[in-house]
Image 1 (tube, rainbow, N blue to C red):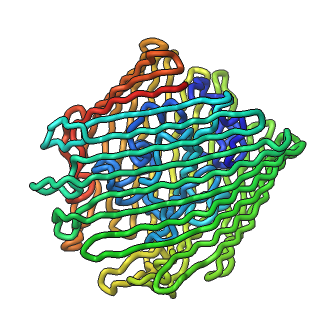
Image 2 (image 1 turned 45 degrees about the vertical axis):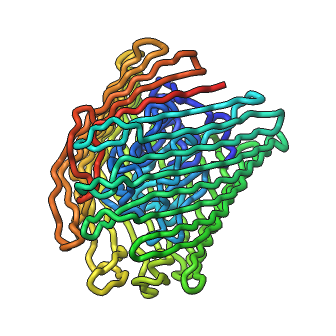
Image 3 (image 1 turned 120 degrees about the vertical axis):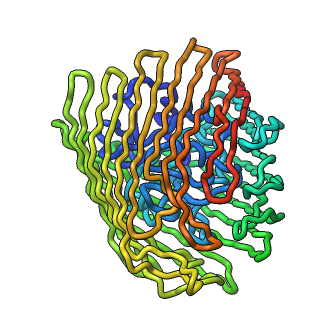
Length: 608
């Protein structure tokens, strides 16, 4: 997807007809959900507004098959991204069509704390291996984020502001300690579009570690970005952008659970260029970005990290007879990190993907990619994703299945870093099988049930006994069931629910709940007023006490929240009030870390 999104993508935050929903991420074409062999999760503009003031991690954790440990703790805490029983480096984040990952981090993951919800127009999440379209690391999920497009008006302004409490269940002081703001000026002048944005977030009041002293550990993020687009011709457009984000968070000593004045500083700088050239039955897309990452860890063991990556993705989209949708592309990635000496590697991946939409209900999405790595040579990954839609009087019933492989090379730190590096590491491999059924109808009901089974081999872990990264000799098997439900029984009601069962065997599977439920019931009292109630259940799971290296069983817990919004001026000014953890439940999300009790948040959206 080009960084200047197609006009047809500036859409459907309020679309009610589930049958007409369009998904992009699993094929890079705008195809009806009926033709997709995946149960793609789509988060639109309405849902993003209902979560204003929250973090991206909090929102993603409400979806089936996904759990971000630390998302219900102090805002600066992110302790692991888990999808379908996997680990963080098996999840790939795509931002405006470009893979983003920090090559200087231990696992070469992207830090979700660098993202601001206020800058995002939509999020699509594909679960399961998607390496054929998106390359290495796309083993358990792809989180595809699209930022907001400029207005078609000559000049527009969008402003958001929220404030709230930030307190534990034991200390209900109701002091204002959580703030977020964003401002964006944007518009279109003939063939030129532009956008200038700024956002910041600050929270205080909570200690990172749950200790009696309750020392406050503040978190802050400041981000600025500029985007320009130009339509050179009716069929040719280009866009450029730049972004700088700074993060500053204090934290405590997790070994021994001691309050300490530790601090983590991080800065990201990115510039990018994209273009789209359309022709009769297709288009050529080009996306490029250069990103620098710099971070410093101020603690008893101080360290600094510096890395950069250059990503180029060029692909041709072509449609045969309105039934065969093809992608032919080339992806180049150069990652570099500064250790005692500079270390780098490159990937050059040609790939192809084909979607066949038949006139009789059969749809097939399949592809292959040749991962060519400067350290490991070439490795083929592939996927086959058939589905069959049965037309019904009120909609369709779809059967779907998938077989996909993925391939994850060790990070630069694991290969060449200054602590525990092992240049003899082998790449990880991953195999995913899925099967399921989805119903979508004119009765405004969509429901799906999906079974998945994954196998991981050669996964890289840190051996605390030898103080070194190693490949595991055992195989990890993960399986589970994901159930999703979305129903609009009339124009006023909205009911969404999901359930996830996850079972991981082969290691201790810490912080992965076996059972997880999320529900949301919303009601529009009028065109101006909307209210909702949310419920979340996190089941039993294990965590490790890293002082004794023994596993501890954590108790399940339930959280209930509420939200209400009212438009003071239609399409111009909206105010909202949200209450999280209404019953002030005390719980443990990650062993030894603070969690949030009852908290109140209020804010305003203004569009000019």
